[in-house]
Picture 1 (cartoon, rainbow, N blue to C red):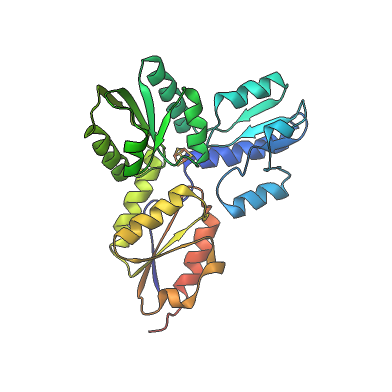
Picture 2: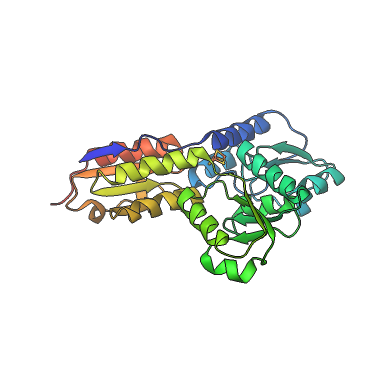
Length: 284
Ligand code: F3S
């Protein structure tokens, strides 16, 4: 069948840097064992490759021995982690994405300027859990209902967003916040353009095809978002990790399939999927 790829998909520079940093750490005879505080990225294939290369990704700072080396992944961590590591003589290799670092310093700055910081994001996402550590009492909101429940009235609010959120969602939330009584609003754009470009390319492709495949980790927030945006275009959309999850019924009656992939999906996953799908003959 005819297969079209999105004009922008797959690894972003933050993820590439994190994987490269992890590989360098493993080859560099870092002191003690190298342990990552959780999976380096939200992609099973990459995580398994790094595991085989010797990287322990089940790290918990509390159980690490003095003198070990800890890898901070691209999502970043709160300032307490740096402090604890310093106190316990644990060496840090920092692979926090530069854009996440920027969001962390924006939060600190907004607090220093006297704003009550509001972060539009998923409170369970590791990036958000790290960023909110850079100011006291940061309020995390992600849905309309959160606003009434969490936002103070007539306050001076400083707003940032999770880097991987869709601009439309963030703009909608800012609009809803602005409808409420507030003294001052300051919005700092912390969105990642790498994500925005992948989202635009996915929507563009979804409008041209009969079925869309969004490839990448099922827990990857930016990959889930790509799938949501494609579905919003009204096209049948499947979020799969790899070709193994493909089923013939997904392309029944389709002539043209589109493929995109999240910022943590390696190229080999996309290439394998595209090669196999292009030689596949769907049932009419
Ligand atoms: Fe960084 Fe954007 Fe990738 S925030 S980790 S470059 S998706």
